[in-house]
Image (cartoon, rainbow, N blue to C red):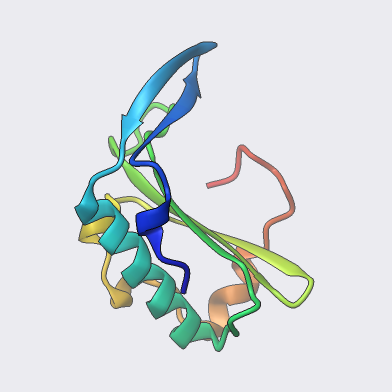
Length: 113
């Protein structure tokens, strides 16, 4: 796993055409590392498979105030999983079971949940 300590703790995000700061806490970085580890273990991902974990604020009405988004590649296939809680609250049981993984193939449709 790549150490998250090398990344900046504050990044810019775009919201309604206005840039705003998003603070990334040590607790979030630790949660991102945990989630990546659980994901690699659950789906047999190798060190060369790319895993991206983020915590986002959804803009869709009715969604929870924070969500965790996981994007990863397994071979040539890209998957996207959204968990409707902050990264620090995610546990291994929140990851979909392996046989359901095909439902999370990411076709690039940004409007999909």
